[in-house]
Amino acid sequence: MPVPLHLGLEHPSALWIVAVGFLAFVAGLGVNLYRSRRSETSPDAVSDEESA
Image (cartoon, rainbow, N blue to C red):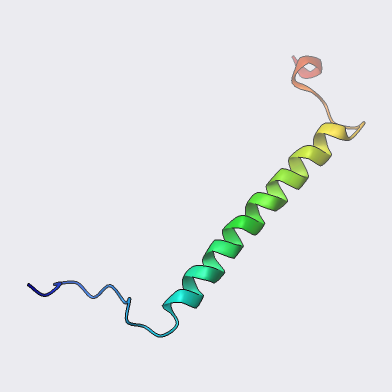
């Protein structure tokens, strides 16, 4: 039985598209981790206990 939907897996650049998307996702996680750790060590950052 043939697949009724076109999945685009036969596209020659499908692997590159997935790889670039994955790298962008990992880069976003890295930036978020860097910013969250930097804000924890910043003397100007307000902790949850101080703001309550």
